Length: 507
Image 1 (cartoon, rainbow, N blue to C red):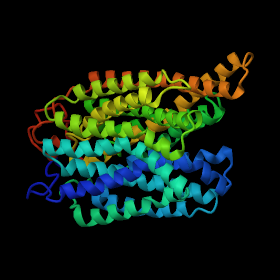
Image 2 (image 1 turned 180 degrees about the horizontal axis):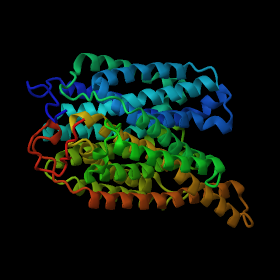
Image 3 (image 1 turned 30 degrees about the horizontal axis):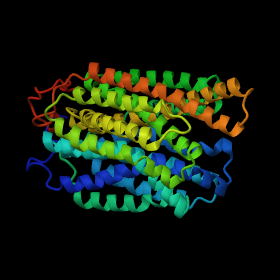
Image 4 (image 1 turned 135 degrees about the vertical axis):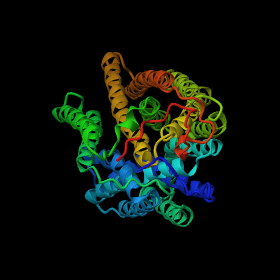
């Protein structure tokens, strides 16, 4: 299939800005779901009689299904059509959320969470690839991706606020039911407003070995990290999962290089700019997810904040993200090379994270936590925006779904790794502190709080390092120029303004 017409010849889709509202709403719902349930989990666990050992599965079931099936979801979007996949994903997500909210026991809850992950994996790549093919003018694309980037980055913090409100004033079931209006409005809006872009289908036969290998490989990887968090890195099952994921993903890459119609054409991954985006974004998400977790614990357990107050304590980060994404990233994206936004953005976030290594029991919120969050938000918003756009910039129409899925995959896998890795580091540092200081302690409660803060700051130092590595990767791998003119994904024939042109392989 040629790289022509990602949109009808009559010009840009007249409903594209209305469509953006519904796409953004769907993206917000998916991102919210990654954190909203965290705050409600203690109440849900008590109500449904879920054991401490199985509690993590409420989070893990969603992460495994979502992370494992994203590439498949992206390919389905290219095969079925993005609009149809998007609407199907939304309806399924609403149904799974209703099931979760009505859960009467552990099995029903875990099943509902896995289903949410399955439909999220259909919906997320379709949403991003719709944006990629509907907004083809560089300036419009910058604005659209600015809004999308702000939601993708700040949605997790919004989830904490909403989760806190719903749990405190209604009950945990509403953290599921709240998805239903989001999904229904977005599905109806998408059905009536979005016009399926012409010429962007990839009707090649489905690569079944690729689907099986990538899904099992990603599930093994995510599960390995999740299990490491609860059972330790030397646990036999943890090690087996990591070995299995390496073998399966290596087999997947070999398969993709040989089959006629690959699930993930290697041209999407090996192009240096996109490769740099996937890698730097995945690493940055590792740092961010760990931070959400530690700051939530610190504010609630050490500072004694209520769930609602904790949620609101994250507002400066959301404000920073929206400002960085829509005011800095979107305004400069058409004038400045992406690496000149991404690298400084990740470094600014690292400086914000560095401030948080100074946390103590009596740390002032206004004096340290608030400025640190503003820097983190501004930096991440500025970096996320060009990264999201560049991940699908210059991609052939037939690959838009899988290219979008790779962005989501790097975020999902990054989130799972971040939670497990940084949690393990924090737990080890806490234990070491308790061992060293137990002998002379006169106030066990104070000692416990000091040990927890010591654990958090140790893990946050790692997050600082990870963000610096993200900045280095963005500065060295991403070498395309400013995304000015008509985007390559609009099917522009010259594409000379950047190095994103990949050899077209006929299917």
